[in-house]
Image 1 (cartoon, rainbow, N blue to C red):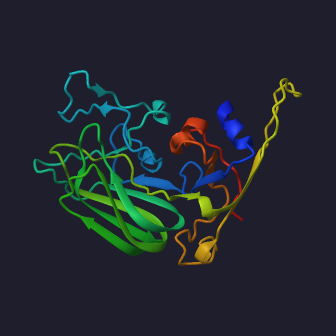
Image 2: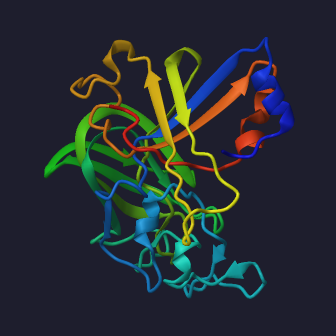
Image 3: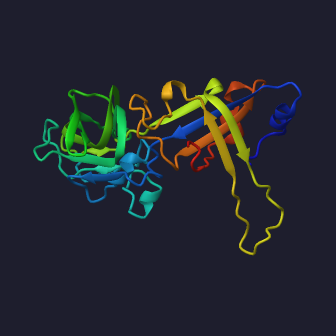
Amino acid sequence: MYPVSQDFHDKMKAQSRRIYGKVQIDYTNPDIDQSIQVSTSENANYSYPSQVSDNIEEPHGKIASLDGSWILDGTYVLAPTPEESEELQMGWWGSQLSDSSGNYTAPYPTLAVTFAPRPIRSLQVIADNKRKEWPVNFEINLYSNDTLMHTETVTDNTNIFWSTDIERVNEITKMELVITKWSHANRQVKILEFFTSIQETYEADDILLINLLEEREVSQGSLPVGNISSNEIDIRLVNENGRFDAGNRDSPLYQLLKQNRQIRAWLGTEAMPHATWREIFGDAETTWREVLE
């Protein structure tokens, strides 16, 4: 059990109390979904395209480049090595440099992410906020297998963090980003995030039941190699309008109700200050299997 304050225990055991639950489910976590694959048309000497689907939206620093922009003023850092890329973020860097107007020539820098069929209802392109660079003109194509289902064309963009909602398109298996113009001359593309994850939070009347079974930890392990904790959690949610019916094509979760989704759960009381969720549980995450049947 995560450590909590004595005040929390006292309020949870009080004779007069009201307990609240909160559940967050990540339906498209790239660390769990092994169907997610990233490919590119080009790469710099150091580039980590797989990082465009890990939900980390900024690089670990202002990364130096041999494009003429690097100044020895102490503000730049070196690109992470392959060994360091497990902890340090860089994202996808292309190899082609834009011309004096920021334009690229064909074949244009292209990034593609493939995955198991899922609905898409929002798009995002996140560039480099440390170097203050972004794509100006680009195109996003959504495919169902080899069939083009939707194209989003963007011109004159000025946002490092670009996003938009679209009318939901089902059974998408591939997202493609084609960049034709960059914000700066003589620079390669730098994309930190492209894959759009789907995460939902349920509170109050959305939750019917939270049942957590935790094993007690003994002071001394009974096995020489240590003990194994096998905790379980059962969650029941209100299935309003068939939201959790696997075959409901009108559900925003169509094609996403699968085993091994990542879940975070919280408990609180009415007497607690509103902003104590993180104070009590911190950022700790636990993954439980098959909580949505």
